[in-house]
Image (cartoon, rainbow, N blue to C red):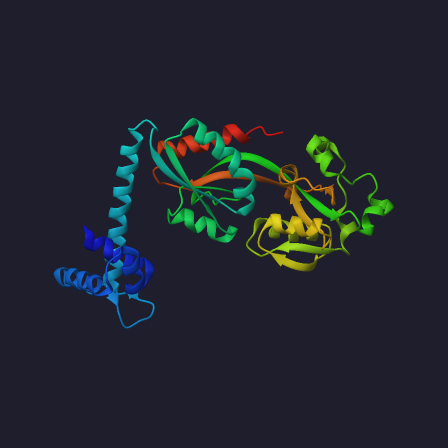
Length: 314
């Protein structure tokens, strides 16, 4: 029903003006259609005296019921699309910028080769907001770390080794206490770093650290690893993305935590790398989705493709 779509768009935008623009109708026409439905139902859905618009108590009940109907319709569409034997369909997948730039391309290339008729939208966002998009079903699949098992289903793709990246000119690299521990980007590309000795992170307590902002997985690991080594990191700058902290470290601004996967995807000889010995120096990358939602065959195929591409990655 067209009026229901109108109401939902006003609810989503919290504004008649923005909703009218999105719906390609005039604001008066939109307001009239919403008012007419309210009169037919005998309720007031929106509190028009607030800015932005708020729902009345009746409106909250109406929107809750409407979302349930929309979810049922979406499930029906997904099930019907499955009958097309993966010859057509659509998915929205997401990951933080590092994932979108370095992990997704190989998966998307293989998936498009296998299922040319299925379109995939890639949505990028910062880590804290990604799981909310998954919960609201704004995206179908997310590649990330640390999924709450009560809210999400997740399947492992690969494990990463967290390492310390130190600009080559830094004096600590010439300290005899760390001799024999430093690794080059080529060492990581060759794979020999996996059996290299782990350095004591406390030796780097006096360095300035490039840290990610709170809420990011690598921020939590950095703070935890430094605490395990008995110190609090000296912050040089806070950043949003892992690739940015890596690039700034390579430019000589400070030390930072990276992963072996990132270094292998973007090797840079301006840094030396040190392996760390802690359970927190290993993290797992998963592909996840909202628990209890219907998972289309296209989504299942994407998960399997991702696992085929990355599982057992050496």
